[in-house]
Image (tube, rainbow, N blue to C red; front, top):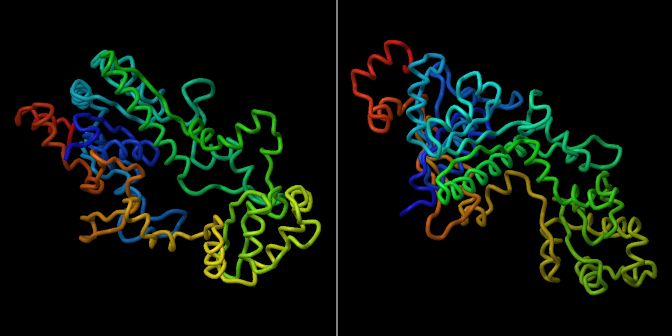
Length: 401
């Protein structure tokens, strides 16, 4: 079956997470992604066996999943001969993708100006920390940029520490933004015949991630920037509540009809209490009503409450943990989780799947991340058209392993 990005060739000159996951999305949907790595160790992600000192399993899921469906070529770009190999790849490629700093790329003779002279149709994509303008030299990490955007300050209970969304969430979102930008640039290139440069930064992507509350603040709602206690939300029917099991998120409008349905599900007619009898009174007495609802939800298990909510057509969801969600058949049926063979442990493993479903040109997982330089000789011969004696000479000078 044809793939959506079949015929597109990507030079993946990225490391760690944001850049590699951008290339992973392109590879999942059929692009030929060639990961260019230093022969001495390659992508630093190859060495990740634990996160925050916690073991991550018996196989390197950090590297292997975000570098799936890719080829690997090992080139020493400090050698002039190595640079010539890469330039020959640029001639034959559609996209050059890197999350190294533009200043470092310039020093390596890999600037947009240099590569676009070699191939005017090239899409030159960077994943920076803070964008291409202003102060671009400070280090960037997922958590430091997330702190900068205001997202963390908005989460959590007042008086308690801000909440970090989780390891790599901003990186992952930045990777999606990068892949989107690349596809748009390819579309434009195919109309005009000219490539262009683009940047998808951690800062820009996480500001977009904060969009609902950030836009409200821009529009004049200054309260949208503040932490808000779940015990004081304006609409008690749109809130999170504890049970004697899991927490449950309740999502309903503050109308008399929906409040009556909630009371029926809880087995208590709170509406008979005068100060909860109307939309406005529930809004004005929100703190007291939240306390009353919580006292009732704590008497039930999450299964009992969810069943009662469903019987009364109330929109709600349990707050699952990761152990719960990987058992969700809905996620497996939609390929949000998939299985792939892992050569490292000689068995099938469960992996993060495809976030987008295309009916005629679906994505797929053919292989997990490649071994360092495993495709070097084949690419040198088949794609770059080097003769075998030339390859031997390049090995002799250390341009390739």
